[in-house]
Image (cartoon, rainbow, N blue to C red):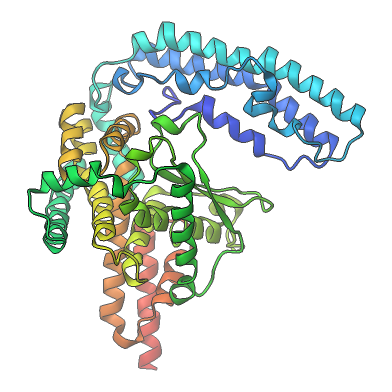
Length: 472
């Protein structure tokens, strides 16, 4: 709570999601929304208060990840209130109110947004420029902060839901990097490229054939891949979610410092989930990685898992809304691998994209622990990422800053994926011809988002139950 912001977003940008908190079917819906907007100044004051406390005790985000961060604040400071993100509900009379009643609501909204909401953003911008940025710490590792090493060890256990130490995670990462690197070298040989690994990566980063030229092209490619995977889902799952999903660009106000893609779900039953694709800096968004990204964020990855989780009526609501990174992100990375079995990655460059995404998650184990426990510099971490993955250099920078500002969260992906793969191997070996991939996936997902230790327990109980059927 002393650091309510990361390199990608903060309390000030996540607040815009209240815009979609209602379907605005009545005048009362609009009034409730306006009451929430009136609380924005208090919300900002509270967060700024925590950030000031962080400055006092030495718990701030590092200065290195905050350069240019002001753009994410100024995006909400507009001269014309009608251009404000928060005015969107008042652009259309969805409640069917009389013209005079709706016009009165519009006037209220304009007064609140211009007088309270935008001023809150202006005050935050002033605080950020005059107090927070000048006082931000220079060291990037969380271990440099008070009780930082203990905090990082705690976060590693929290995000991986295991008892692994940062040292064990670092060593696992190095081993995975070496394994995946050999597979990447095999693909380079397959395509007949004459040159070093570094030269091949440079070729991928710079050759125009691998990049979309318009946002529409990138979005269409992503939508095609997603729809292609939809057709394969019945072969892999007994149950599919009722909620549909769409494909949309990352909002422009956060796109420059945002990751390459992400799933944005909705708990409301009248709203779809969305697979966000970052269309900012198109020459940094390689098409050869789009299959892996899409399978991770849309289906069979986050949309499928999160939507099915929300439909588990046997679970209490807090469990249906829960999201544990090791489970959810482990499933997302495992979903990229499922694309191999579903007939994706036929093009060797796309297969290299899959491997570079897997390498990306393995490298996280190394650089995250490296920066936060072993004193790695930001430059060393970026060089390690650049040398071992085919991520664009823009992505390398934004990703490294994300790991700096969100300690240990990035560890969850690879740890979770390896656990799911290991449990699948156990089930396949124990059950032999009895093994059913659809039933295995059902068993993985049927309990919702759970710690990896609980998942292991449940899958082993499933294996025992299946074996008991044979014995009987």
